[in-house]
Image: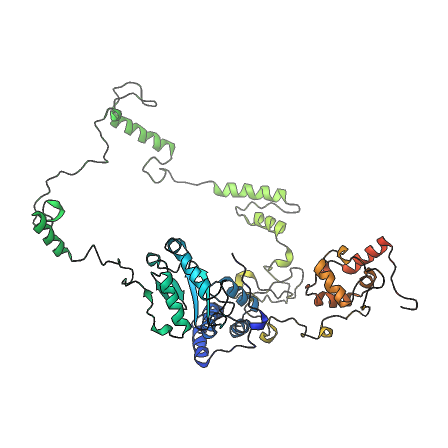
Length: 498
């Protein structure tokens, strides 16, 4: 599956808002879903945003997340997963989608792609110089019998030749796309045969009359008349599939293993004797649905025995032989369920048990200590409320162009040039050639600089590199101290420096 990313910042608009008509449509769409399930409208709203602007922008994703009170990452996942969403600007007059699936490929889709490379751009997902046209290859557009085909916005153009596609692109480029008629471009009616219908061109009476005129008889090439009043059937019922009871293998007098001695045994007698044996055995025979005697099953005795065994195997547990499995259940619960996750059956005197909000309780404490809902009582997902919508955005917490506004403290020992020969910072786990170059640009060349940082200074560096805590987790300060001690490198500070 291809990686799909949002467009570059240089082409992203500053904001997004639905038009008055689209905003009313969006609100009506959201109301179609039950309370607590409004997030299901994310795909329709993103599609309407794309219809309005031609593609899905970052600002549109944020706007939809705000409308649905939905975490931004969830909307971003939807927009980047479904290829129906265009994440980059497309042609303002036409975006051509060329079907490349097997039927279209066999019928000339490669020639259509060559036309798009010639008329629009050498690469898909790129616009022409004027920004009016763009193209891409897609999978099955659903009219395989009319291959090859393309789709422009929401209309399909089928049965194409390279020359016809060039003409279509030229018309869209000239702003005359409304003059085109969607569908087959070779005179075909929908998906009917190009030369017209060759079968089922008339009703049944016409077919019968044609047969009689050409062959002198009616349907089925002379078959007997059918229907009411046609007379009795001349063919006897078929015995196909019925057992041949006259076969030698079914002879009841034949000797076989398990049969009574003597070939004179009567089959009826055998059946009677078999029924008697089945009755005495108290088990169902073939074709029966139960035994012939009713009574106790001994289940209570077995339960009592099992409970006693479970009690003996549990330390400090007393045997319970009342015929229930309660003691066995208690032993298993004690073994696997932590006390803190249990809702007690009773409370100490004076403490009321409140389960109205489905809270967890500490078994050893009479006070309610949990705030997490019991799983069986939850009715909503955990990500319904994302927090303040204005704080849920793509940009970093630091203001662009203002490095001093980053979390933590900016290191005070940054240098304009290395003091002597600079250290090989790539020896620190997590620093590669690119990160080392960025650190050098910032004024960090030596192990001693990193070794003398405070944690708040390392946090500032981590945010500067957009490492999301990696520098802190990998303990760059301690690594630098170890490398400095192992190499015997001096601090490199001049005399009189702290």
